Amino acid sequence: MKLRRQVILWSVVLYFALSVPVSLLHELGHVYVCTTSGFDYRMWVDLTGGHMVCSGRPQHSFVYNAMGGVFGLAGSGAIITVWLIAKKHHAILAVGLAYSVDQTAKIILEGFYTRIYESGAIDAYITVLQVASWIGFMIYFARVKERATIAASDV
Image 1 (tube, rainbow, N blue to C red):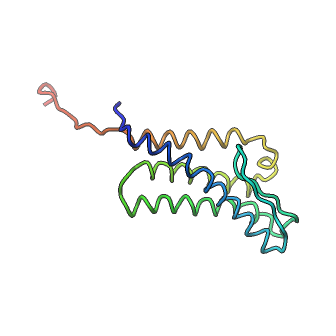
Image 2 (image 1 turned 135 degrees about the vertical axis):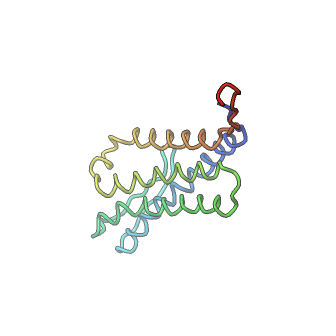
Image 3 (image 1 turned 120 degrees about the horizontal axis):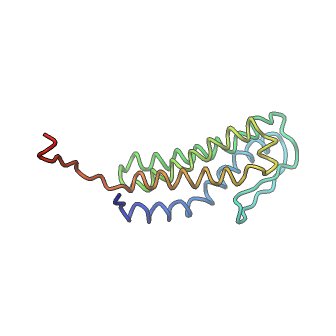
């Protein structure tokens, strides 16, 4: 299988360049619910990603938990929209789709399986899902589609 090197290169660059902005956007979803509930917050980024702590417990915990993924999914949708408008550079689409998979998983896990998510027990699985989807989309869009040839004996 032949792969277009440029798609792979740009996919790697975009994936890492957008990791902090998408992570912060995710955390801003939690910040939104926290602040509209009247609480202060603290937000930071480290090597494991973005984090935020709300000084209180918002009344609508499902909304609070899921809103990070909703904001992150909106950011992922914006990345995909850039590709839809430009119709160029499949690396943009690969990265946008990978972040969409990740943020959708986080909506489900943070919203419905909050205790498991907050325990950190599945952090590695979420990372594997995100990286595997990114590599899968990257390879899919980097493939060089070769013309089919029909041998005389096939006719």
